[in-house]
Image (cartoon, rainbow, N blue to C red; front, side, top):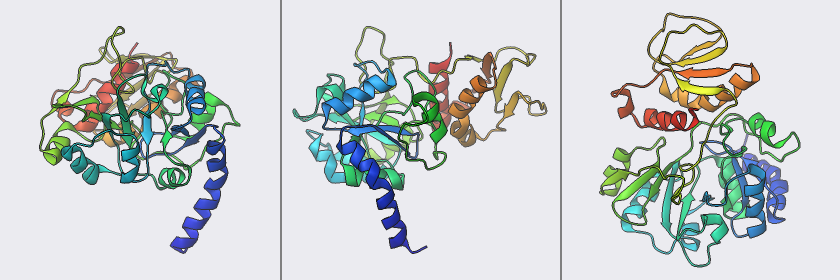
Length: 320
């Protein structure tokens, strides 16, 4: 099919969703990480609907999603030169940057913080949607605390069959973006993702630290850090004993590779596939009535890989 015709058809398809967003409604849409719950980033009533739809705590800040570099300047007070390098190298892609915010940026968006988180997603449908509708807040399109949605049906499971979703199949990565605070030095990673501290440090020419997780009594400087996340109804735990329960879903990656059973999923060292499927496996555990999900721990050597560190982060937050 002609590229221009494809682009035209995509634009027509998105027009109804753009109208919903312009009216202050919510729309779920695909990114390369997970499906996002979109709302106009300049409409406080629409943003309030996001918190209500998800059951999200008001002090959990949101990420602004953009479709070009110029849009950053509407939200960020200053852009450090090193951050400019990161945007040029990694955007569009799974990297969220935290900047000092401009005074006009809505407090409801930032959780009352003096900073704002911004990302330029890579998925072509998300880029086209934002280009037409303007900047959107877009946390994961799921009920707070539940596994993030990587398929359109996951959104429907949480929000109902009639909820507006731009359906585009499974997401590519399956885990949320890396979140990096560039508002002060040293730069700090608040949420690990597919882009590592080492990659960021090399491009920025700056030291990059991994931030400690906030306690219940401290403010969350980043989305996805303070509260329980990613949890199915089944109990999620790290595997410590033998595989002896039929009421348990086992997610393995290195050991026991000779075992085969309906309740055993073995990734044989393919951590990209494991990341891609993790949240869907959590949801499948509930669908099939498993009481527990046991996951093989990662070795110190495996944790040197950025995607494995991201997996460790998501699983640790889901562990009961």
